[in-house]
Length: 283
Ligand code: AMP
Image (cartoon, rainbow, N blue to C red; front, top):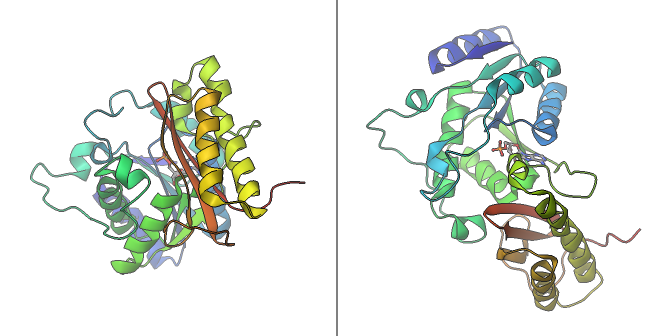
């Protein structure tokens, strides 16, 4: 697997692949690779002849008080995993390759960004939108895979690719979970043993609330109960726990099949997000 640091090298490879008629799948990540990332790579490999993974801890999507410096980085370990998976190319540019010192352009998404993580992390989706647009234009893949774990991000990326006529199909992939239901995340390494146990309650409460709503109970009451249960379970804060439409992200007031629950919670200084389709999960 070749490791490329420059956009020019990346373009050389992708141009050649296009001429050869190869199909290209792109899997953008911030590294610290885990089973969630690897599942996206498997999907790309099933759908394309060539797979490019990218690792870039994008400074533009961290707020000044967020964990940009501490964000877990282990490129050697990531490279081993990608080689084992049979990935064709790793594109891992540094920040100066991605952003010119006088860079003046930001991709701002105006819909889907008035709620959830856009509210609790202002500017976050401008950073995501800008870097993903750049990666899509740099690699010009046939498809790009993003996780449903970051569901609002997935919708926003689909929207920006459509709006900007970027000729790549954006594909969503299911959330990979630990045995106890916790969504796998690079940030889970921040959790102490105690907090790790508490963390599994996010999924349990999402599942229970989804079932409660699917069985016909009041959505606002169910979400209010879920927030109380999260605090009782030991979470130190809740950014949101809400039921929204899975395409428009508008709040929903009564159960519908396209409803989804969204949660963002704090355990000390670690923020966890998760989401789940609203349906009856009783066996
Ligand atoms: P990140 O490195 O956290 O920016 O994530 C890179 C990609 O992996 C994004 O498309 C995420 O949605 C996806 N991803 C992260 N965690 C998971 C997970 N547990 N299951 C599936 N995809 C995930």
